[in-house]
Image (cartoon, rainbow over all chains, first blue to last red):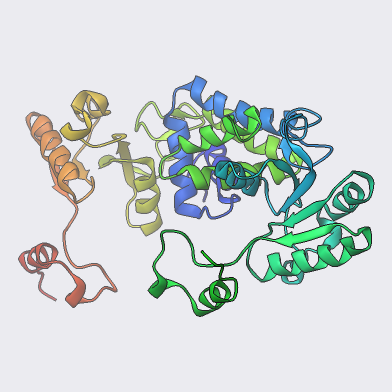
Length: 199
Length: 199
């Protein structure tokens, strides 16, 4: 026996498909949407179709955008000779918040992960190689995550790009600012020692 | 500066409005939806509008349904003389799973909660009083939650219904089946002692 009306069951099922949302949470979210005024629920549905229909990847950096070329790539004040390679559009946001980087980005949309059947061909690596070969690029910063998959991806790409004679760098490892030494793991602390700088 | 394309920002904002969903989770869910094939994202949006447009409250028990009278109220095999009063449509599902109850339900859609500005008029109490006065009801089981608000709601309703001379009962309190005595709080344990039965 189905306990809820079929449209409610369908809505719960849809929420359950989202990552990190279990059955109970899906129920809670579905009932919340049902309790909203009709316009608000419709606005929610419209935001989904709208985002899906109007958001593409930038032709240059592969970041999500609603124009052919994203605002960062089309900004004439940015330094086009430095490309920062990241895993995810969220990483672009994180780096932009630092206000320390004025170059361009390249979003891979994932990292190489054999366990999850994600190989180099599933990522936007070909587009990056094209940029490195065609454009006047002096430096490529590998800003993939400091985990196994991010490391493997950075290594793979740096080997691919070596023939182009471009300088390839990696984000510095070290203790996080504002953290406590006693809570830093030994690998991070080791890397922080190794990369120490004169003050 | 907006970091994501406007349609993406709007989708993230919509997810953020859901209960228990913070900014980071909203981002994750929005990006997941954007990564889905177009048909799947549209199916999600359709499930929302569909549920909102086709789900109403049952004219009799106020439970959510896609027909005028819900399947439980229109089932001729159910005992129409017993009404079980619950806070939420999810509670109907929980009680149906026990397969111990063959009467009808009445869904209040909330509990009296002065702190959250929810008074008796915000709940489906008037409809319950109408049912108690018009139909041939012999017993009303108050199955609101065993918390302060549920208790207050049960007390309020039982006083309202007293003039109709109908038997009003409350769910039994006690230790949960499969639980451990050492983890039961003293109030529950006290109630379990108080309600002890001969075996």
